[in-house]
Image 1 (cartoon, helix red, strand yellow):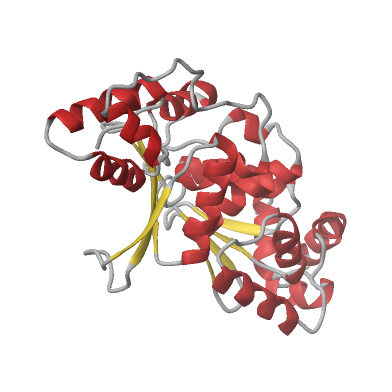
Image 2: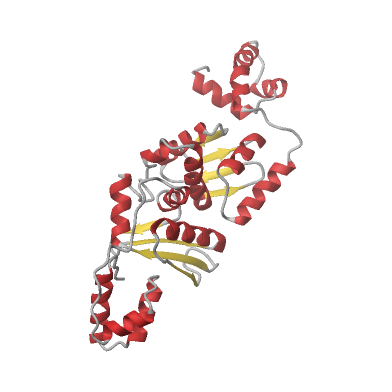
Length: 307
């Protein structure tokens, strides 16, 4: 598939297609399918001899990082999105329309170019049809690579440094894009999965900065978030654009009869918990006595280097 970022390139492509026998109307439809809305009158005038006026590039980049761009990065890098270097395509194919729609909204708001969003038939990956969002732009692909200086490939993605150093809103947006792609909500946990364990370790740091309780299983490639307080923080600071996931998370939060222990309180309790365990008691007993989940106790002991 071809790409074009400048009006002159669109003009050149129009002349090329017209010489091959396509009418101005079919050429206009060709551009529409790629997500570029060029007025029919402009295409018609070009095929009749008018020249393209010199204009600035169609894309304007902001120096600041918005939550929409951060969300898109969370989808493109570690999530279900992709960058196809061969044809300068940025895309996403998913079964959830609300997910695809929000990703499309973020791309168009950030880069000010129209994208395509079409329903496709089932692929070899499943029986459900998928919504595919596409944006073709050499300039945007080069911008993403040069600005963020990270790999966006599924097996080797990394979180851009600017995300790590940003405020909670930007971190949350990035995690939201990742979670819409790679997350699911089970009975009492949120699971985030990736085969890229080094990337998950960076996700771990973002979650830590938001005071969210979780465990990381490197051999399985999953992060498990647990506890009502962590679910509420996740819901308020990260959230899902995918409605079915967001609704399930709210149901789980509402199902709790009591609050789980916040992270800072847990840290204060660990000295007493360690003393209790040294007396010969089990982690399960300590969990009941101090109101701290058994897995949380194990994690904290490991962090503190206590056997």
